[in-house]
Image (cartoon, rainbow, N blue to C red):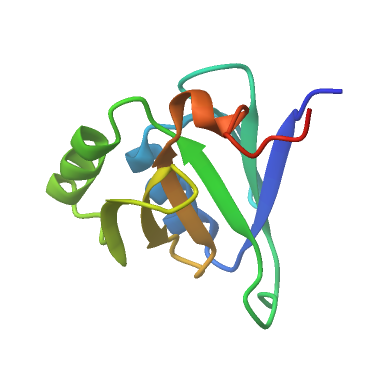
Length: 124
């Protein structure tokens, strides 16, 4: 099994589309209620669908892996993207930066290298 795509809700499609294009995703499908993007690396896709109401509570967290995380964050800041937490090393051996999309969905840009699939505590 392989993860094909992830879909998040939005109450403002044009704003969400512009935001995800600024992050570097390539728009491949667009309608008034749905947009789908290709991720710049790999074969996964990401989509946004129009909703009347956003989920209440902590919602979802979407992780996008970036080989050069620190440079990617600097580039996005230059483009006007705000971050809640700049890149820093976590105890689970990932380097992460936190931000929210225009609808408040939690995004994490990260780099984990070998530790993404093979942390020292992986079950064998």
